Image (cartoon, rainbow, N blue to C red; front, side, top):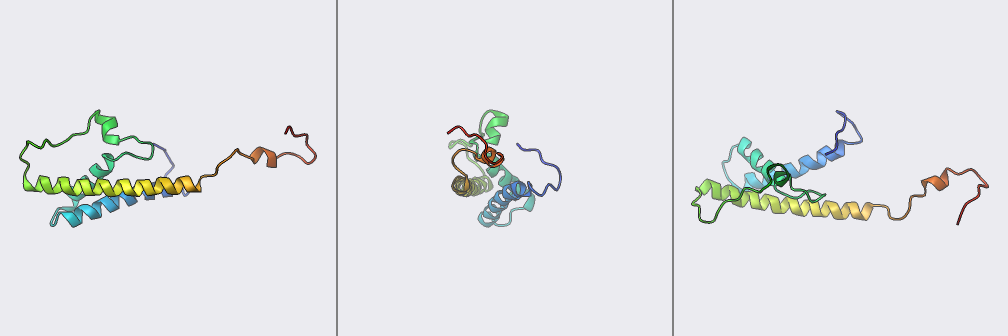
Length: 130
């Protein structure tokens, strides 16, 4: 978790990236379950996001509750529960794809090698150990 000041322009992208995932999950759920209320669709979208491992590999639901709640195959769920479960699984799969793309993008944009900032701050004709 990273705490940032309100309207911190250098950290707005972090928040926008998170809500982009929520929006994508929400759109998948609304498309899969016709006539679902906006509140329930938003709850399912956040559940999909919280049941998916983040960039650091931590699953928020598992971290908070110590286990992932699951439906047993022997239970006879109502049709709406089955529809919600299918939509939730599709949303989780999409979030995993988006996070994987983000990780690859971040890895490709990362600078490799030692930091050379100290060298640039040296005065002219300074002794350097090579």
